[in-house]
Length: 262
Ligand code: SAH
Image (spheres, rainbow, N blue to C red):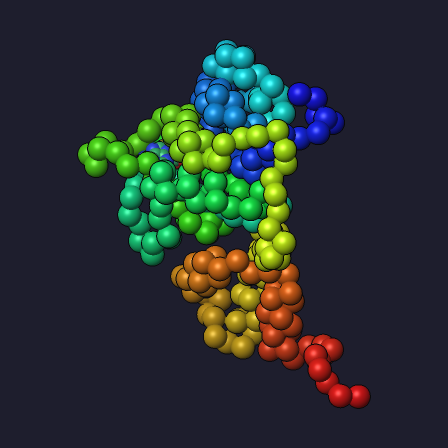
């Protein structure tokens, strides 16, 4: 189906999920991931600073999913790949980490994604072949997904991980039909996107330093905990305006007081 034609429900669902691969070393893995996506009906691939791309090995391993590769967007930093996303999910080869992020199994994650409104954009982030995701990258994620494995040998090839997570999403998708999804009139406001959340975290960090709650010489743990806290809830634009207004007030800036009598 052409890009400009009317979208089927299936395409609306495809557009909901974005696969993000970070600093993939082997171009063959990028091709294999594109193939894994396409067979499960996913098309949107972002590559953060791939070591070699485009590359003939990627095309060879894509085996007919070259359209996914051709449309893939290459960016230099994770923040660029998720700026318009409402939900960011990291993948972890380990089932436990210090200062845990909310963790789902691949099955639970597939169900969670399938349940989300169709106009929410969801990014699933996959790490480097050798070292996975850094803590700084995990800070962008509201939750993690782990594919249950042999505890003594838990690290899958990255394209295999893409395959399993895309599959779990696919089996939880509702049966597709040719009409666009129905929207619930009482549906809540769409949560703010990642760009807005990052602006908020920067403002929060600056404000906490200004009021000397945060020690700039050791800020990491506090901000990570606050990211965990705010990442657990869907903040909508009107609520974000209130939070930013409170921060500005804490910084002593003049702002228009709500409900203030003239
Ligand atoms: N030593 C690394 C393993 C990286 S494997 C680590 O411990 O993080 C490369 C990537 O494949 C991971 O970053 C993740 O995106 C994916 N992956 C591998 N095994 C996985 C698993 N069991 N569950 C979820 N994702 C997995």
